[in-house]
Image 1 (cartoon, helix red, strand yellow):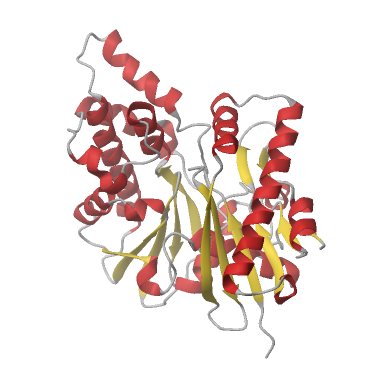
Image 2: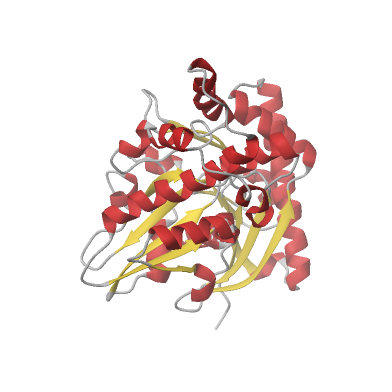
Length: 375
């Protein structure tokens, strides 16, 4: 049987780099064959960080970043092919998410913007490329996010249990898989975005490796209470969010209240520890609403946050009624679940199969997501 190889490409809100996943869809369930990672070049990362913080740029700058990202994705794919000893003709298609620079599904004119020129990806790799996955769902009244729950359903559903897949990337989102119930999935809280931004601001590090800095901080109850008061947590799903809400400006507004009320300001390290608690507690609060008393409650964690021992420790402690594991223990590397999902989305688009879940995004109907850029 001819192999059905697809490559998924994902660069997320953490801006750390490009994840690549090679999937074989001749198998059922499909199998993750190989993975790779390309660090985000510093110049591109600086431009993206500035763009995401301000939400403003010139058309020239936007076009140039779009081009640079297209080249980065293409170069990453070509290196990956060399590494796994495959040729472009061995790959049916690439599914590339692009880099989200704005996601606004609830405004008067809903839109989402992912950049990274897919024409360049197709031209430089010689592989048919599928991109622009979110806007068709939004055109049908959906949030355009999250898109990964349909993939989670395909891989992790089991009738005898409640399964929740929790991806802790820059933002944390869940997929809820339950027998006789439509699958739902939505963003539940921030993930690593604030933690990474805060330690970079104060320590010059990209992330808090093994939570070593946070572990020696103390929780500020006052700050934690204020963070948890964010109205987003009271919104009913479907819902989605991103760095346009959970960013340093949002955090600094919370911290300014300490000065206004003449209260002692938490130290930067205490803020980091509080942010870990905020992330774990806001996630746990949502999961407690979902748990069942008559069956196993399984939580499968993936994404960069699954490597944070303090977050995992707190989730396990806060969720006594749950079995807390990672997707790696079910055959899908925690760092490459989203990249694998975009390979799956490309496979569905090439075969014109529906790939959104209206129960997740709120769209009016199922549709095959993505725009095809021929090689």
